[in-house]
Image (cartoon, rainbow, N blue to C red; front, side, top):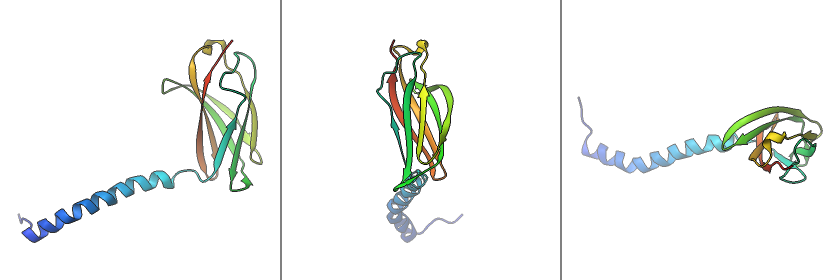
Length: 134
C-alpha cells in the first residue's frame, strides 16, 4: 500500500473546495435545466369555492408570445398529501376552460389545488389554496 506524498496531500487539500463547488453545481444545474421553458397561469374567481356548485377556472400556457397546446390535470392536497386526483382537459391554442365542483365533505378544509400543466416543453405545477364554503 502506497501513501500519498506531502505534496500530493497538500494539493488534494487545495482542490477540495473546488471539488465541493463543482459537486454543488452538478447537483443544482439538473434541477434548473429540467425546469419547464414555458409559463402557465391559473385564473380562478377566488380561493373559496361553494360546495357542489361549478367553480370556473381558466388555465393558460404560453412560451414567449406563442400559445401552447398540452394537457391539464388536478391534484387536491391536504396537509402535504395528495388526497384526490382528477383528469383535466386539453389546452388548445394556449387556453383551457374548466369547471370544478368541490364536495360538501370539503367544506371548511384548507386544501391546495395543484394544477399540473404539461406541454412538449415540460411540466409546470400551479398551487392554489382553496377553502370550500357552504
